Length: 251
Ligand code: 13P
Image (tube, rainbow, N blue to C red; front, side, top):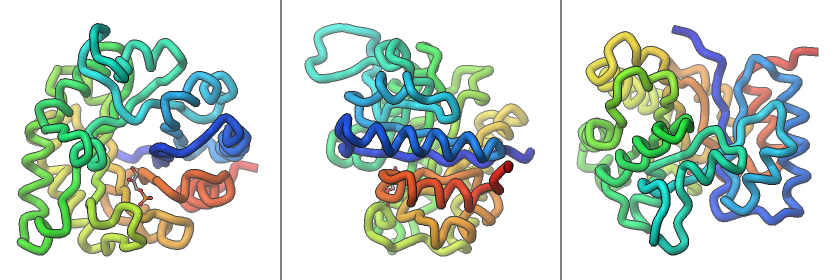
């Protein structure tokens, strides 16, 4: 199945209100690329304001709690994200898995909670350098998928998977197109097992040091349905160059 490429910016813990001007510029640029689906996941503090201004991009969260509400100091629920205008949330980013000790079971619970709240979900998976060097990249990623994908029937249309090799995140080291092809094929095979035909709707994004210089080559790889972009999503100039690599301008 062919899809509109999906280009998602993950702003991580970057962005003050002054950076909303960049998001507005990204929104204007995205409006000229209707063949590309564009989204930004800013920090929680900017979601409401960004969503209010956005009409050509989706705005989402970078994480959510698995409970709807309660005594969880500092956490934000999926319902709260939706309430301020988010339409999706990223779960299982490797920085959450590593720095906040999030297990596959926690990631799955968060994905389930987000879907139940009416959000689309991007589930992240990816191996470390040690795991890759040990020849375990496919096994690690497939095990992460098996244990962290939500399984409720009828939800595949709301799901995206992001393959982000940990060693490629923020390092300037990009996975080779051949490695990306191998990993995305393995992920597609797991999605077929989990979701059968319904899973064909699920895009698989590549993430890890994507920029305007490598985006064309990465997006041309089989089963790469878009990109999850960190550093290069922080300015309109660098992010829109990636959007342009994903699809032509309309006018
Ligand atoms: P970089 O694009 O900065 O490598 O980050 C990738 C990432 O982690 C996106 O979620």
